[in-house]
Length: 554
Image 1: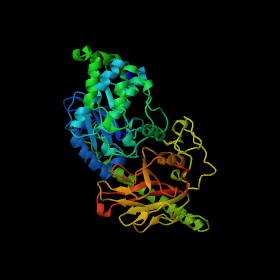
Image 2: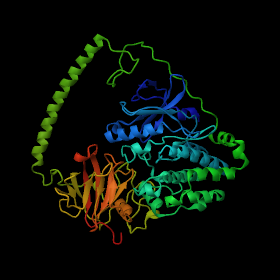
Image 3: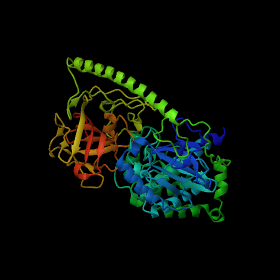
Image 4: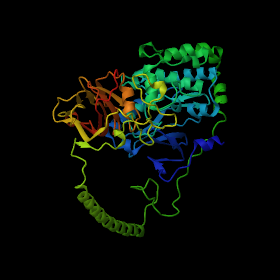
């Protein structure tokens, strides 16, 4: 298989030819924040240009975080980092460019050749730990260190996307497996919503290196919920790892962040074990064996020659250097627009008539959607008690993660969902439910939304980013989840202790499991979040409640 073909994919119909003056030569891939393209500087140096997803670009909170993290990331300089050279947080869409690293990611290399030998793992850990030193020195915590964010150049590893993860942390616009803050490589405190520090990155380094040594995640496979449960509640099985590396992995993967090795200690430990090879610069020979032949980077594209003055369809304005439409073409375009508008008016009239018929017919139906905060029929994904939404990353817990009082049936590894237990309460849906400085909600009330602050669950903006808070109920944010089930909420709430949860990283689509002291379980799915002005900040979302659903002892 041609490795260059795997790396450099042709542009597709929905890819722009130019972004902020950078001509795009090929696709490099897609991630949690957007698409990544190969481009070149004016001097011909290759760069990886990441274009932010439109959904994120429309979020003012994201833009502010993105701009702040870009400013910090510009200062990072290190032998094992891919330098950020250009960015525009105010662009339409926002984008950033880093130096292109010609080499596979660690994830690709391990998938292609299998687990790495011990010397290569030592070189890997030393290089990534040195990159973390440079990143942490600028006050940045990576937050999403994982095999796909470590590129293997001919002279050693390069860490990418440093400092950018905070900007997109918690977003649910990403596809399964691309969520910012990847469950399989999170630290326990990150999964629990506690403070994230430089020690969090060291835990992720341990997990990333374990993946390189084993060829698979250290905590196993499965749904994100099950992996997070194992990370928080169980110690890793270090007997699976090569014996010479176990002492270092034990320090990196300590449950208590204070007991973990520092990045500097990891570098020193690895250099001692590499011995003379470290002083003699033996790393490049190791990497050539791992990465294979060097990939030839495509040359910069020439500026397009305006052979035919036809404008690109689908762009609000012509990119720089692209031909403009002629007067005749503009007239033809207006005639087409008139025909389309007329067709739209006719179609709209038919739609209005159909809606009127539907409303008339709905008067005779026994159940209808209520007003704000009222009860609704619970048929959507958020209201399912034991069945995941199609395409969701959430599955019912497997047997390895069952131990928090969850005796329900598990899901098989192929994503099949378990059936609801006959004893499970019927889900009750409420939409929309608004939370602001004057309202609250209580899961135990027949109508949970309250027009006062005496409910169990409140929205508070006295802290940066605002938070959900309660005197008695506990919260857990479901990382990367879509269509979370009752069984999954039960599992993750079994040991929950936090009575407040910051919303700094939450976005539209973020899901929270909630449990009150009476055993009621709720799933709140944010639809609108406005926290830019604390005095008028609010949340609006969909709420599903399962009454008395907590298992005894959970």
